[in-house]
Image 1 (tube, rainbow, N blue to C red):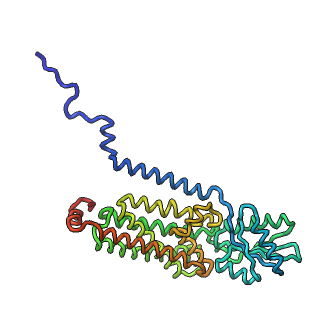
Image 2: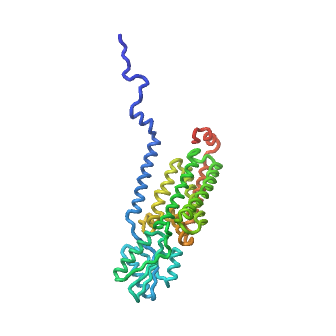
Length: 359
């Protein structure tokens, strides 16, 4: 009798579905889904923040020769539909200029009831789109009263600073360096810090990187490209703090969530932080949500502080520096806490013998 052989020879290649399961693990599939969600959040955040900028309560000082006329003008400007302006009375032009340069107001309207032409003082160094929006709103009010308007820029952006965006781009570069450096330091020996000594070394290495990155970024934006005026030392200090704050935040998130922490850092810094930073559109032009969170995130605090250094002699940047210092301290503390509360001994030894250093 002839013996029948098996229909499927032994050692035959697996089917397509088996190949897919072998090539794409469940963990990889979940990470890909996470990347897709992060990508969609990126698209939604930028378009949501920038697609329809509207002025909201732009701070405007008002100066006239008489208190009664000033009060009437303030009430008229505050009553505009949609609340584009937040007007306040100021005694004279010198006080108005001082308040603009102290970043207490975004502009000033000098009304001359004896003539038909008024002056608007703006500061394009705080963002060209903001001064342009302020001019458009006030111009419409003046035109309705058949008056002329002359605009004077008392804190203009530098010639090499197109539309006042160089501060924002510098801050974005510093932020990118911060979270990429932290990610490399962490994944070089596993996504979580193995012990307190290693976590402390990584924070120290991050600090050294932040000092170098802060200096080189300030030099490129200032002396090399002549894009930003202001104190080089102040920009260097700001850059160092910003890079370390973003890097420490990234290390902390990696300590809490492993490799997913990199995605969380991108979510906080890029998806939430960049659109709300006040770069392309300063905060009075952003929707309510983005306007509210912007000052509390590293890109927003960094952009505001960088513009203060460049064009306003460092005025009104204390809050932004405190925000950055808070992120730096919180990130460093959580990084160390994650290392201290990990299981010691056996886990550390296992990591030392595991290929790639992963626990």
